[in-house]
Image (cartoon, rainbow, N blue to C red; front, side):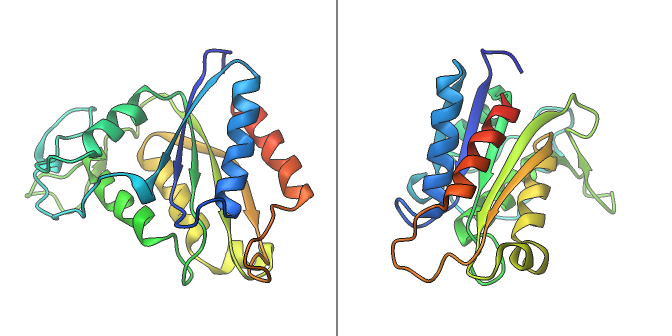
Length: 201
């Protein structure tokens, strides 16, 4: 990517200044130091509602995301997704999965599918589009390797990237973070966060 890269960070953490916030902040710092731009969306503060499963957005043909019937902040977020040249998708692991607020976002990304009522399955609108790049960030209480492969968080983040038209080029998955109330991102993870951010730009 060029020095004019626009990176969109979507953070699904509930905890202010937790491991996920620390990791994404370090990545944003690296991105901005390179001359690129980065915008952070904290889903805990972002005004989007639950999907109604009406599938109105999926009936609209074309490569562009369908329009949702709800009048909330989702269209603005879709516009940001479309304008970005790369992504950092982040969520800690809660009960073996991404957080509920990140899952809510995932369901609203149904706008990226074309699914007429007479078809058995959806078509992804970005399937044939030029691919963008994505970095996945997550954490869990279990050891990192175990948590990454046993829990569904990594798979869900990767699926989110695919839906919006991005290939995953790296993952930061930090384990064993529940031993302190206010955990600090380990130095090894800090170094990897910087390295991954550089790959993204």
